[in-house]
Image 1 (cartoon, rainbow, N blue to C red):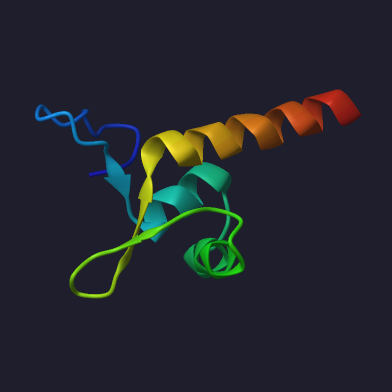
Image 2: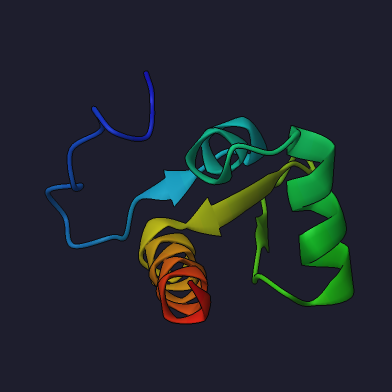
Length: 74
């Protein structure tokens, strides 16, 4: 399933994205997303297995901010 086709969860929990899904939105490599998380540029949650997951709302907010920054500089 991709980030664009996932539906909000019924029990009120926020949708979590994998590094690959976030990378696809930003058009970067998944390792870049992991580096952003390590640097504190984007928040992440660790699963019990140690994998990173990202809150969809936070990812989309960052994407909108970066898109607005690019549009203002053109």
